[in-house]
Length: 252
Length: 196
Image (tube, rainbow over all chains, first blue to last red; front, side, top):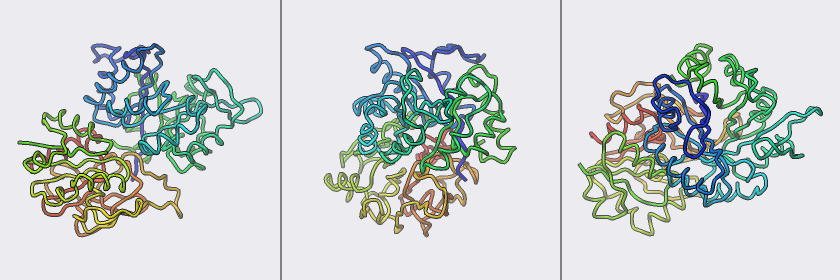
């Protein structure tokens, strides 16, 4: 049976992990390769690296890092952050990334999704959506790291992106992100039910029960979290054992 | 021991090379017939589309070369599917090593997400390729097409239906999953192949 996936996310700036991490066994808390190796050994099913640096050297630094990660990590990983062209993607895939994620650039230039799917296959194109529920009860798409609101409904954009060739949707609820009150079950559930591709839920994980709910109730295919793993509030092995004991298909 | 990875227009060649390096095996990536024929082990990787890949192989006569090989050959993902007889993916005639058709997953009557992406279990494991690998072990799969069950099946997986997770005939082996991305258990399978 296909397992539900647990995905730690690492924020990267100028080739280093950004947020402080609370791993005793780590020698260099800023080294993404070392942190990623630990997650892989602990049973993470995939990893996501989100590059938030904004320098001219960014592309080169990132491709060097991706190459180091690919040498050392024996599970799949996705790279995102500021990717805007076929050439950007080519460099990252050639460096060893398994998938790339695109967000604002795809919204502004939707044909980028078609180009990437045609060139590299849908399996490596992850569309990331930052979404927020407004007072009118609808979920809208936000851009530029959640700073710019659009008038586009999240579900509509997700459907268009899948039709254009997105192979997975990485859905982050801005209402939930950072709250530790649980994932956004309603919009995640809507996307899971209506899309033909896997949905990765992100934003709001605070307890192990939150993960069980996003798999059981919202039918997410994967769940992503950052700080609760980095700060060891929840360990990947204990989380996976907990979900397994609840009867959720999990790789132990 | 000389291990080669066949170089062609496929996506995961680097990943396979890195995985070999992680378990201490040097390999060369090449499309030179002399290098491939003289190798002890040949790995035929692949992520991509069947008809484009077959055209590329045919244009360089690599198709005839591959089917003539006598040493152990391991096809991975699309590599395994290309070793089959025919693929529904753009109605492509493939190498015909395994007399097994490749069809597209259907989600007509189910809620299956296609392609299958993620970790799935393998069962009914046969041959030394799976030495030390437990029944129901999880492997990482990414595919929208599958090889059906046949006399060549040496591992099965289930996704809406039972299909071939691995195939074997004579010196040819194929795995639908990605051992190079399947954590330590995947590295064990690569090690097993190298030791065949």
